[in-house]
Image 1 (cartoon, rainbow, N blue to C red):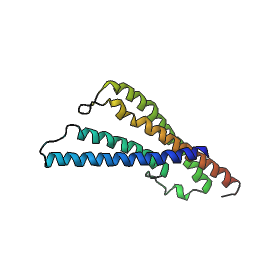
Image 2: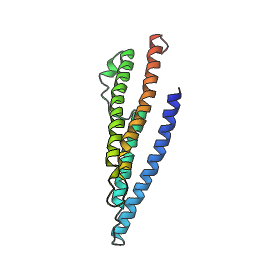
Image 3: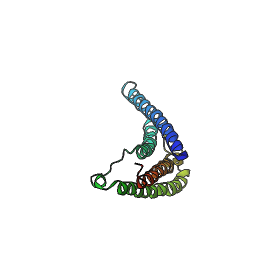
Image 4: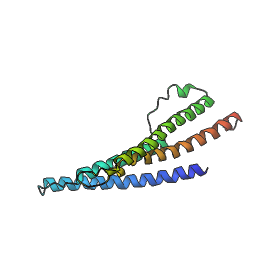
Length: 164
């Protein structure tokens, strides 16, 4: 149950951070349009900043999607399976996603370290902070998957006992 509390709290925090990032990105884009169209002078940093915020929004949004089950799934075959087989297939699917999350964590962190010396052209931000979105998203996905696996294992044992 501890993993569920951690997963729920992290998901709430990620939703809040993502919302703030979306507001910031929208403000930056509106500001850029105002400067370009009204003042006839564009900002040098706005497009790049909005792009990096968008990358973080997408990567954090992936973890929200995993937590809340928003991802595309082919359920036509799964729904025809008996309850126990459905639970087992959910566990297997979560484990496969966990492998993908581990790849994101390991190689994403390696890549972030490789590009850490590179600075973005306009903002002069280390690209480490942009690429760090990949392993951070991987860690969040892994936490949500662990909670999902725990719930499914509990359901599996309860269904075998006839509780469900």
